[in-house]
Length: 376
Image 1 (cartoon, rainbow, N blue to C red):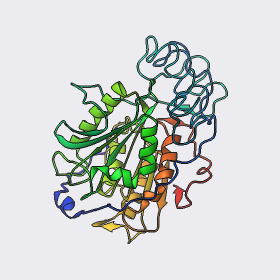
Image 2: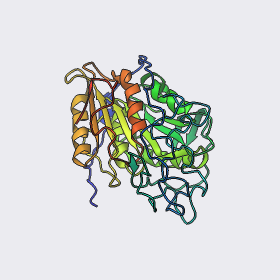
Image 3: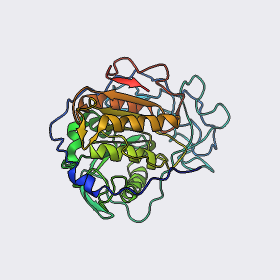
Image 4: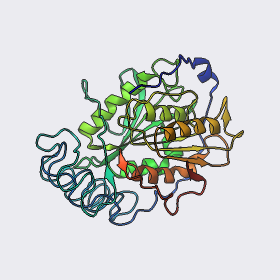
């Protein structure tokens, strides 16, 4: 497969003027509803001895794909996503047969008894995320700030590690002039749900929203290499579900989150940039195209050097042209004013584990989703 070659693009002057405070707090919306049982795979997914999972199920066990009983913010009792909930219910990927199953890799394919969806299931999961190998020692991913691989001030937030690999992970990129705890203001419903599910949040602190190591381009690969290792360590030590790794960010961080969705499409399940998008084309590193939910303000009003309504539209088209599912949300307001849609972004993430198929929103956005958002 040919990768899109990006032209040389030094953004040091760009970053010098792309100033963004993003200090105001966002609306803390509910995390969004999910029916008991969900709509995911029923019993019987991958057969015993499948490529990655032992007997008892593929990616989803009995009980459903979204959330089981216990509500939207995953229950602390009965499993990270509620009783019988997703991504793993009874008989799921950590059922008898282990993880990985005998002779398997990390995530299973499909054996006898069905493809990815078992009997009675409605949603199948195709393809395996490519989690980078752990190289060297893993830092402890617990609440606090760490220095790692040349980046100082990496803020980590983590819930209680679940007993099975069900936890989600969020990689958040703050805006220029803002701080690493920005996610607590602009993505509060996502952050609260990730922590409640025993997941991990990583948010690097820097003067810009990205490329903290070289400072020459907001799409630099150096920062993503650091995230590769933190992802690998979170999967290894914090029971993060390899299919539940998401990215978000605002302003310069929104541009970085959109770039990461492409340059790490091999493991990013979905992305929701707030006043982000693409300034220039970014290469994808796999055939997978993460579902994209872009949030931005009104054209002409969401402007800091560039018009983020336009950059969002550029990314929308690029992801859609690759066959990806895209939702565009126009708040009608100004820069990084999309905090009120963070609850919808969490619903979007929950519905889109890595490689989900068929598209769960193919017939339209779910009831209760913001009318500011439109499928593309």
